[in-house]
Each structure stands twice: as structure tokens, then as C-alpha cells.
Image 1 (tube, rainbow, N blue to C red):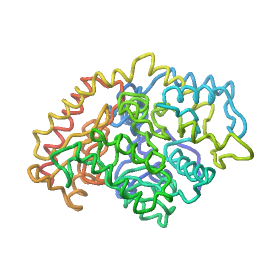
Image 2 (cartoon, helix red, strand yellow):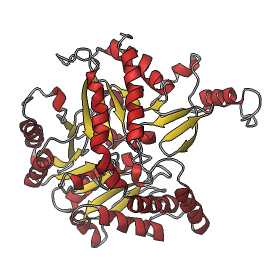
Image 3 (cartoon, helix red, strand yellow):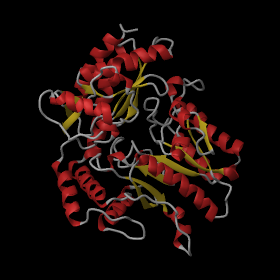
Image 4 (spheres, one colour):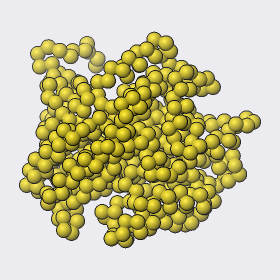
Length: 465
């Protein structure tokens, strides 16, 4: 039954938390925690690299919201850009019409993208962009005389979104099992977790070649005439930040060219400065056929995503009655597009990408200090994007069993890190890791704060098991 809103008054914070418990369905959340008396964390304000809860406590945002708030919280310029656009044109769809901000943003993204990736199809998020890329790959090959090419290959433990198609491409069994059967045609190959390598464990370049060649093997096994695309993140997020070994992406590009398979770079996390470039594939010197992106395009101040495709993929849609039978009401929303442009202006004016490149080694060196702890097995990543893998035995790399992960990650670390003033992610999609991706304005003082909080909490965590 609906009642009048009540947000303030005696025990106002508890009232708001109760309303969250009773009405708000949070994403990827175990609600039993709150039904059993746990207080719903409520974040009410952000400024720079910090956020505050409803009790006034400050936390370092060690995950940039969700790999998203690149330029930091509380930037008035972005609020002003949104307000100005709302007054001019609050909404209009891109269904056979255009509006200025979508045009300007498409041109800007095409300018940043590598090679001939000049066609921008807007969505409202990364999962929708991945969904769009698979649909484009299928239709493109149908239009160009190869109608059997519809399958996709992605990597183990990779996350590519929650729509049914994107979820099929995702390589996390626990994320998929509740929703099966999914869209057929998605197949998995090994990721680039060199720390857990069983092949070429002492030669990272040979390991990268081995991992890339598994893609060629999968294409051959499924039949080259049936495989449309390979989806991969330049630095894979799930499992704890797997960078590409030297030569890996170049070899994948060669394989895709050999078999006429599209290479799709899912840069939902890696784009817009996270690896120190607007697009991470530019840093690695490889041009994909499609880039999918979202998150940092607006630094999270408004929702938007995009699929950026090469001119070649657009060619069949320029003639006759052909059109891409796909779209979203809010794709390329005028307000979100205006915010994205203002965000990218700040990137250029303040040299955000250069700041990441100038400070990434210092961030890595600060996190590497934690390797003196017995529980820290590996520190890996790139730019301002790192994973710290936790182990039971550093010498043997023995990991924790399911019960130990439950007690360590969810029973202790997640809450303990937050209580200590650090918002980040303790996760076991793959092996247990702590993921860190602070706002791109972070500096050495923030790196030190992250390391000190992690050290204190991890030392205590070694006594939990």
C-alpha cells in the first residue's frame, strides 16, 4: 500500500533505509543481508575521489562508482550542460531523425576511435552496445552473402552484459545459469590469466600466442563459415584484470582477418581514460572492427553507450531498402549526449589521459607493496585498473575453496573495507580478487590511502579463516 513520502524527522536515516529495504530492488544484491537486520548503505554525496553516506561518513571511491566516474564526483560543468540541454531539447529519438548533440558526439567519438571506425550507433549502456554489435555482425554477413556466419567467441570468465544476447557472450557460469536457455551460438576460449597459466607459464609472449591460437582452433572447430565475431575486452575485468600479453591482440587480429571474423573490442570499462587513452585498443596498437563503450563517456553523470563500427560494416546499409532493424528509445539521448561532450571537453582541457599515463606506474608500485602479505598472490592490471588476487598459499598459488571465499569475501572483506573507508569490490568471479579502479583524477595521496586501508584490512583478514 502506498503512503506519503517521509524522508526526514526522528530517525530519518533509519526511515530511508527501511524504505530501501522494503521497496528498492538493488542489482546483484543479496537482500537477505538487509532482511536479517543489516543496514542498507545509502550514498548521498560525492566530491572528487570521495563519497559520503547518509551518516556523514567519508569513503574513498576506489571503484569510480562502477569503473565509471572518470573525472570525479561533483563536477558542476556537467550538471550545467545537462540543465542547458534540457531547456533546449529535453528528448527526441534517433529513429529517422537526428539532433545536434548526437551528431556532435558521434563525430567526436569517430575522431577518437582508431582506424576507420566512423559510424556510431548509440545505446543507453554497455550491455546494449554488446547486444547491438552481435546483431550487426549477424545482419552484416547476411547482407554480404555469408548468411551462416552467426556464432561468436568470447573468453572464459568474461563479463559482457546482462541482455540475453550479451549474457550468452558472457563467460561467467553463475551469472547465466538462472536464465538459461540463452541465445545459442556463443562459445568460450581461455582468457589471458598468466598468473594461472598451465601452458608456457614461464614465457608470457608464448603464453599469449597459445591463448590467441585457441581462438583459431575454436573457429576451425565450429566452422569458419559459421563464426561471425570474436568479443574481448582489451583488459578483461572479471577474474581480476587480465592485461593482454605482448603480441596477443595482434595475433587475434590476424586470426580474425584470416577467417573473415569481426573483432569486437568491448571497451565498456577500458574506454575513456581507464587505460590512459580514449580507447584502450589505440594504446595496444590494434584496430578492431567494432568498439562497444559506455560508462566513462559521461563519467556516469548520465546514461549512454555506443557501438562504433567501421565504414566497411556500414556499406551494405547505404543502399536500397536495407536498414539496421534495431534501436532504443533513449539511445543517444540529447541530455546524455550533451553531458558526454562536456565530459570529453574536461578530458582534453585537464589532460586526463596523460595524467593516467604519468601516474599508472606509481599506482602499480604502491599496490605492489602489498605483495609482502602472505594472502596477496598477484597484482595485475594497467592504467588505473587493477586486480589483487588473494591466495591461501603464496608458494603454491593455492586458492580458497567456496566456503572460504564465502567467509573471506562476503563474510568479511566487503564490509570491512567499506567500514574502513574504502569503496571497492571483493569478488570471486573466477579466483578471489579485490578490484580497484579509482577516478582518473586520483593521485599519490589516494594511492597511499588505498594501500594503507587494504593492508590493515587484509592483515586482519588473514586471521578470519
